[in-house]
Length: 75
Length: 241
Image (tube, rainbow over all chains, first blue to last red):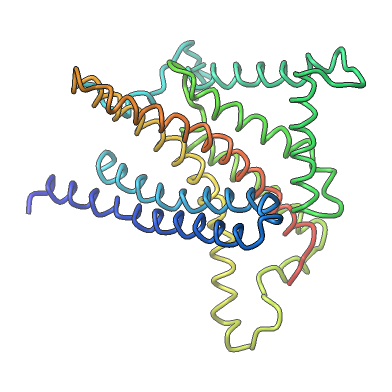
């Protein structure tokens, strides 16, 4: 296989990290909503934590993006 | 067609060479200075004429102060108020840099890994030194989880050590990747809008949505950076294991 083609495939594979990030963000907000609907009075106090989880989770997907950029532009 | 990564290029504005060391004043340095000046102005000017009943700008200052103060006391606990100035400066500077980058034609300082890595390594070295100075060798108990059978410790201690050592990496890459990823996506969609001509409004709508998300991410990542600093600080101040 051509090295250039392998690079593109590798970058595409690295982008699949976003699958996990998507699942994670869905899980966080889905579970937050589940809990919030059961106990709406406690929901406001926990929203900051849900956002913290969202930010940490989104970052893992972006690690994959960084890997893709390194594969594409650094080699 | 310009590359979407062109916006992260560093240009030298004033050439400076200190004994073979390139210390030029670049566009990144310029925006760091701008952010520092703006944040200092935001925080000091309204407090010059501070009143009992706060005005609009004074409320902003007081709210950001209380926000960081409660974050620190919630996460780092007793004895952490000494480090409030550091965490507050860190939070306001990163928040300023992140938000500054959302203004068109500006430069996002935090989209450079060296900037975020410098922050992260200073925080982690400082926290390590602080922990050792405060607890002595007993601080190393941090790496030994309590209530675990001896057989498992053989596996767990190396894992704890590796996770501790990878903290500066994950802390810096998290902020850098969020900033760089968001700005690249904006540029890519901008390219689509230009290419599509008449139908360019479709990607334009996506740009509006992504910009709104970027505002959220800019504030959140500054918050996450500060809160993780608080948690690392708490590890140094109180050995829990």
